[in-house]
Image 1 (cartoon, helix red, strand yellow):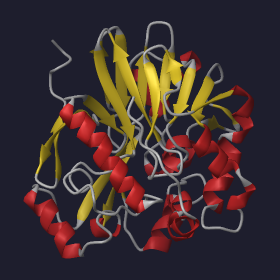
Image 2 (cartoon, one colour; image 1 turned 90 degrees about the vertical axis):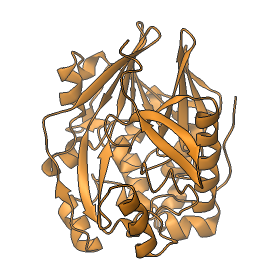
Image 3 (cartoon, rainbow, N blue to C red; image 1 turned 60 degrees about the vertical axis):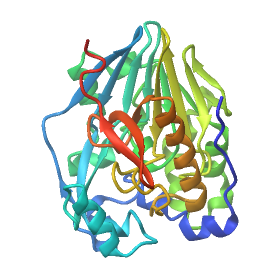
Length: 331
């Protein structure tokens, strides 16, 4: 089992942990975030979108919780590059140089005996902006939140834990929860008070800590259910984890936020990303994970990849070329 891990330095925490605020929609409403950042975000409400496919005996469904268009991609991706360099790479890939879309894609896996949900989207805090559509998407494919038996939290940024609670009560009332011990301990600790990570800490106290008695904490190599295993992939956050699914010999990697843009993060894995808390570690992890995916020709689902967020990568130039999922799993 591959292992991708490391430690977050105190200096890195104070330089970058403000991501806890930036990624916490239940702490900062979209309008306030826009005013603070100067970035104009456009709601992209469309009919709810889902994509289902078979992985051996598993049924996998990716749900589009929502999407957001923003200005100035160079302020989020390639922050150690010039805006012109970032824009040139986007233009080369038939994308606008001055705008980008960020989408959010939780994944539901029906193993036949368990209904496992990976991450919970924006939740009620994102609905005013046209997001928080996970439950709607689940219902579109015949599931209800009450049927979920396991909720896996890949990490604890707000766009992944925002839907854990609904109206002050658990949104998935019959589920148990699985997350990384390192991630939870970091965000739940009172050491975050008075630091740039305090808002993220408050979000975890509000959304995750009330469920602590139902949480199974795992380390690298820990099993969620048979056929689903966690792998440390630290850097984006202190305890960020990815997950390997395998059924009847067919594998799939859920890469969560290892790469957050299908061009800027994959073609240039060394470029720094605003939301990566330890940028050097995140870049190293990105290369290790996607080297494995490319070498072994594995399919993957990335939380922020273009919907349906699934595909493959091949090694190319300085990084990797994203190959979107087509009909591979339909035949």
